[in-house]
Length: 309
Image (cartoon, rainbow, N blue to C red):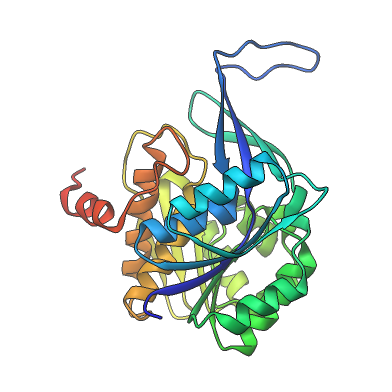
């Protein structure tokens, strides 16, 4: 089907805490409020794809609890096909506590919950039934399911796009299945083995990652922009300057927008896809909430057209 994307990943209930000061060990810091929001890298990416106009088939798992029911309802409301989202009995839906500081950067504590319980049969059914050219995933589930999904995607000659986050889920054996990878600075350091703190070191890291078997490497440098390397040349794509309010989910929107653009334009121009993804991410961080701040395709194109330094 046109612009159909198969994606696989986590579904979480997020609890947001905004604070000006982190507590020292043993201290108490009072905050004004906490806020419950739907989240999970997989769910964020699936919803972003749907908002951007894709026909999204999502593989994931929730617990048989109130949070799980709410997460599935939210996905359906956002236009995501949840046929391949399972409910796991006697297991809680994944939960994350997200601490936002005054600069809008985040620190997270989380439990995978039901995200650990995605099995082979669930994956096989999705890959057998879905006719998609693109497969998007990240690492916030269990390693055996991740590796098996990569093998299934390769068997179907799908274009595999990997967001290698969270970094502690990374395994080098995944790379041989990946066509496009989008690490941030910390993830690029883990994969390449070198320190990444500027454009020059990001280019070096991209070269190292490319040599590990990935055809297209995009190293995200936050508010600086991104480095793209395809084996022939390195290109720097600058970020759009915006007032960041909430950076949670920015990477999810980036990789979803990248995937959406490539699908819609038949993989024609990676640099244009990265510019589009950068704009989508800039819009996202300008909003207070995670999923409701995800833009539509029309909003991204309007932002690019009207943007001035």
